[in-house]
Image (tube, rainbow, N blue to C red; front, top):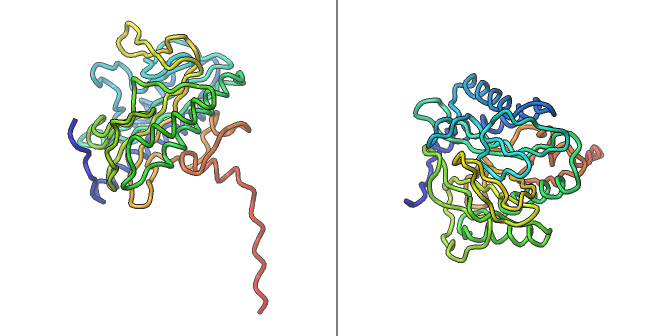
Amino acid sequence: MSNPEILTPPMIDKMRAACQLAADTLLMVGEKLRAGMTTNEIDVLVHDYTLANGAYPSPLNYKGFPKSVCTSPNEVVCHGIPSKRVLNEGDIVNVDVTSYLPAKHGWHGDTSATFYVGEPSEDAKKVTEIARRSLELGIAVVKDGARIGDIGAAIQEYAEKAGCSVVREYVGHGIGREFHTAPQVPHYFDAKQNKRMKAGWVFTIEPMINLGDWRTEELADGWTVITKDRSLSAQFEHTLLVTRTGCEVLTSRRSVLRQSEDKPWSALGPLSTAAAFAAQQPAQPATEAAAG
């Protein structure tokens, strides 16, 4: 894989637009999601919304993938193909959106979130909130000069201490005019990942966290990945721009993600869930006017 591209300011502006559309698409899904709907219905919502906004759904026909979005309920780790599968009360489901804007000669913006369908079990809460917090901790590592491997080290240490495991086979990736580029970003500690980040790099962090063992298997459709022990799995993803002092979360959402960030148990953080985190903070008292 080639060296990561360093994006110029005009290129970054184009990435911001694609990433904002992907973030807005997730917000739309959160408004529509309900028990009793099929994952095919999510696919239709995402497909129509993407085209209506002058973009193309990056997953559609990518290496033969047949749908416009990945939907991964419960034991599905990633790359779930939308189908007639019904979402039931108590399920969790990851929705992974990538928008290519404009629809021709565009840029890819990639983000995902795990949603609650109705009232979740304690196990579902645990794996989902550990995955959410894992993304926050991974983002906190990112800055010019930091090592790629430190992202995975931070995530693995937290997730395993919390009683979950980190999927090894699927990693974050560079993104821009192409869907998947350098660098690869493991979510577990890998001593070989000692390359230092540079301002202008753009890549995703997308930890897949399992309630049980980290091992996975791919189904006969050639895409759907499930936990080998059939335990629950959850994932969150953002696209990030490395800056001199930290990073910019390009897929940051404008408002609270319904049926995910609006729960009293949601593990919100200022980096990965900025709007929801701000809304959760107590109102500050008005500053008294200085005496004249």
